[in-house]
Length: 373
Image (cartoon, rainbow, N blue to C red; front, side, top):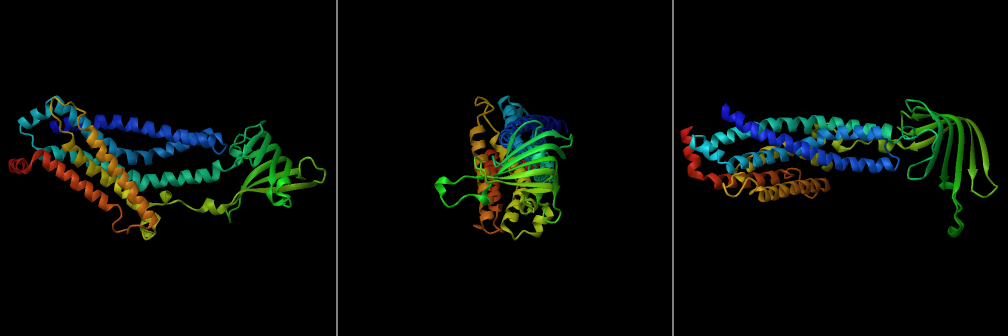
């Protein structure tokens, strides 16, 4: 038990530190990605923070296998460099016992990754998708009072004098947008946009329950339609006017990464569903394969230093990860069968891990260790 606690502390210490660093790096990359959308007027600052927090379970599920891999490499590498592993073997600790300890830790991480990938990640992805559909696509969530703002890539100019705290109601509204259906198409050289300008006292958001379309409903106002610089424009007075902001077709389509795992099982014949399902299952399998591979790769000579095996180890990990991404892409495109799927990648890497392990300790030493046990 003392040896187990010591090795577990060595591995888990590096694992936690590595997970924190990797999570910070990937969250920073996602932050830059979301800020780009926020700069375009498609996300609010609150939405950016919320979406970043929702990214954490999925990122942890994909980073924990690498963190465990590095934890074993660096933890055991230090012990080899400081001759601690030599002392353990001299005191009768066998390779079989070392592997039992490593696989016990790997099993705990595998269960955690399984929960994150098979249950938590689909739920948070579903919530993030609903959040984007109902919140980020609504101009009311993006409007700042007393400022002219561009929406939808410059296709909509919006202004509101006052906004309620919950961003549900607007007062003293100005909206300008080009009407492409009324463009002068007779001469493309002289083509000029026909603009619609709307002025209203109040406005609010409304979602059609049947179609899922998102509307902005304006009350007590006027709508001006015409070509800037010309006098032939139309004026319409209204008590209530609705403008559709987005269609419900795209809003109601759920992405495969937001589908529950059991639903993916029911649609396993679909290429995209099969690829997502096998990807989620592959993460826990990857934990065990990398744990087996890390043990022989962590073995270094005293004069080599603790980082001697990092280059070949990371090269194997990069190959492993790239082939997993490649296999998932092939499944989505229907280029390989679902039965073959991503399993061949795990099979090849597991074979390499076992060969490395047997090369490091040898058949005879393994048999002697088993006899002693």
